[in-house]
Structure formats: structure tokens, C-alpha cells
Length: 114
Length: 114
Image (cartoon, rainbow over all chains, first blue to last red; front, side):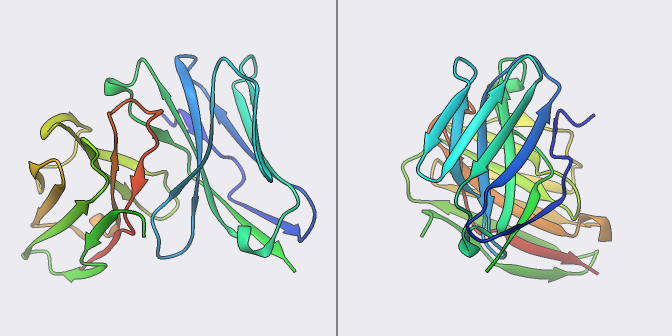
């Protein structure tokens, strides 16, 4: 049973426009959420995070929104740049995970076209 | 440079071989992880070590055997693997095992079992 789901395996966006990547979770005990970015032949790198006590966190071009009632979070990238093309993983952590380790979604491949 | 180094980057092995994957972190972290990334599947947590003690084993087959001799090094010993074990194996480290300590990943070892 996948507790963190990214239902869009891929997304294509024009350079300069907004990219919106979505993530849904089923476990109401999750209380911290992270986004990772992964380029080919590299490991994932941490991008941005949000605690469940917030509904928005912004860092430059990246903003994460959390809707706890809908168990949904999204990552907004604006403006999108070709260098943002990568696979983006959503991850969640909470008290009912043994040791509070991260549970990852399946990833969304973002392609930003020049 | 992520501070987490994995060797080898690529490995092809037969089903009767024994090989080991190595991970080294230079970040002063006290928790290390092995993840498996198969095609079209989420990142799967395999093993977690905190302060050199194994704290999590997510029902991984015994043909995968981890070893953590100190807080900077982590190994994954492989023997009698199956073709379906072909995947990208990622090592990660963090300061503490709570999920909001952002995990830093290595570049991964691409394993092919023939």
C-alpha cells in the first residue's frame, strides 16, 4: 500500500511558466514533508520542506503548499527554467513510521522546454 | 560534491557472485541508509543504521546483508541475487533518524544481475 503517491509520472512545461507538481498521502500521522530533486546518474538532493504546522513554505522560485484536510501537497516552481528538468520526489515522515524514516512517492519527471 | 560517496557506480554480476557496495559519508552524520530504486517504483527503504546500530530492516531478503563498521561507512553485501534485484541502490545519511533531518544521498550504484 503506497502511502505517498505522485499520480503524474511526467509533466512538460514551457520555460518561464509555472510548474506544479502534486503529491497525495494517506497517512494522517505524517507531520513533515520534503521534496527531493534527482538528475540522471545522481542521487536525490533535498529541495524544500514543510512542517504540518504550516501551510506554505517559500524558498526563491520554489514554494510548497500543504493542505492537511485533503492530505495533499504541491510544489510550485516559478518561473520554470530548463535546468529544473529532473525527477521530483515527494517524501513524508511521521510518528507511526518506525524510527520516523522517510516514505517516498514514485516521482514526477519534469521537462522544461526552452 | 554531496559528501556521500558510493562505489562502484555501476556493477554487473552473475546470480552466483558475491559482491559488496560501499558508501562513505564525510558529513559527520550519525545515521546511514540503504534505499533501492527500481524502475517505475518509489524509493524503497531497505536498511537504517543509527549510531552504527541497525534500527530498521524493511523485510529485505537475506541475500542482502548490510554492515556498518563505523558511523562514516556503510556496506551492502550481495550474494546469490536474482535478476529482479537489478536496480539503483542509493546510500543516504542524515543527522539523526527523524525524517526532518534532510537526508543526503550518494549518486547510487546501478546494479545489473545477469
